[in-house]
Length: 211
Ligand SMILES: [Zn+2]
Ligand SMILES: [Zn+2]
Image (cartoon, rainbow, N blue to C red):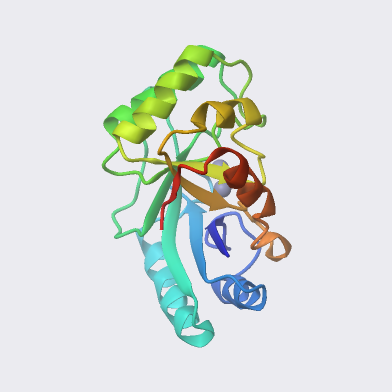
């Protein structure tokens, strides 16, 4: 079992790296990613925090014997830009964290995939109800094509239950890369990825897990 989207105390999560790793080990997870918010977030990580976080990650890997990826979740800013500290990340997720109208939402997602595909690994919680209203079927098809062309994984996120079923339906039969994440901000949700794998089994049989 894996969970590639967990927030720690280094951004807005409530648990330490050690507590997360311990819980992951207890729950039988083999690989996790600690993914904290980036510079644009009021509690986001900077280079100094990342150095400290990395020391804790290395220590926890030794203590618990599980793989812990060092990740970041960047907000997608106007124009599709992302703000990212200088650091050698194992996993970079880009997600929308603002309520936008439909056109602006698609403009940012597509701009981000075009401009930053060499910097990002995963498109996070696409079409989450929390940040989005309105959908455009043709632009959804474009996004699926762009993910494949640019080798960016689609995240299946169990906190947001995103992407929604009708988006996953258009992914059926496509050789998409995907990632799975609980988006846990508390210890109790670490490894809560059952919904993700249910969706993978239904819609992403032709897909390939990012790790
Ligand atoms: Zn997010
Ligand atoms: Zn998150």
